[in-house]
Length: 172
Image (cartoon, rainbow, N blue to C red):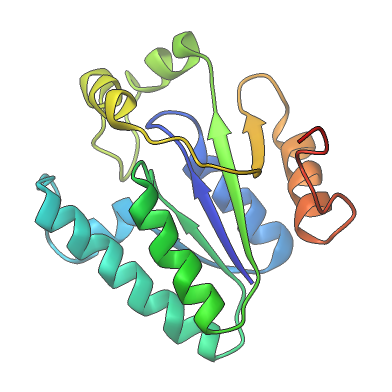
């Protein structure tokens, strides 16, 4: 299976993705880590961003062919980037799950003042991406970090992924 963990900078995506990865024994691919690995840290023009997502897509396909479960952790603020991974999963007959991580503006602002190992995003970057963020149409799991415990978020994610709550939007 393929799980896309997405949301705004500072929402808690990477923290959540790392914990979920350990819980379900999946391979974790993170856009910030790949950016550093490719030696393009600090470069955020559209071509460079696309290069990072293309590299993650290539690695995702490789792991899926090996039968591995994958968690891809990134902002995915553009629908077209999420749809690219949807097409990959569909072409490989793999289930895909979308988990959006959100947090309050206050929580995000505080988090973005802290030193984080891979992410370079600060509050100005957050505000810029927030303006450009394209909501995901349709239903997907939304988790609120800073409100729910990591354990509760993981439990909800597992129920969503493993079918105990196949439709996270029952009111549609």
